[in-house]
Amino acid sequence: MSNETNIKKIKRKIIILGEGGVGKTTLLHRFVSNIFVDSTKMTIGTDFFIKKIDISNDNGEKYQLTLLLWDFAGQERFRFILNEYIKGAEGIILAFDLSRIATLYRIKNWIGLLKESNVWDDPNTKYFLLGTKKDLEQKNDPTSISKETIEEFKEKFKADSYFETSSVDGSGIEDLFNYVAKSMI
Image (cartoon, rainbow, N blue to C red; front, side, top):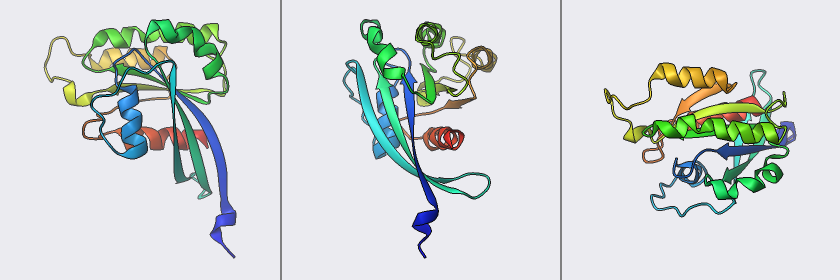
């Protein structure tokens, strides 16, 4: 008897949102292909990635989880198509650049769009706050984003968790997506 029959196969739609240039596409390339692409082109509308993960829940049940990862363009001119692409999203990653505080404050605009699309109050959707470009964050820099500010945003945005990543060295990326995956089963 094969153990294959005991593995449950499921798919989950995950959307990553944030201002242009925060590193969403680079993050997804690092996660899906384990490569650092330092010269990505601006995402036009959306891009799409798929990653399969074998994971177990706390009861030891095994899953093959297919993450359908939608990379949404950060530029304002593409936001009009957001309503169509976020339908059915079970997880939303709200990304900001740790070296640019304005990108954290602009997450409010993304949440406004989620509210307009009637996604924000869906109890089945989970939210994750993500600080990208950890490799660019400067310690003791007076312009850096304080942990207190990030925690306030995490609570305000109903984020299930907060992660920091670097696509340059890959740090934090597996932790982020393993957490997202576990919360999706």
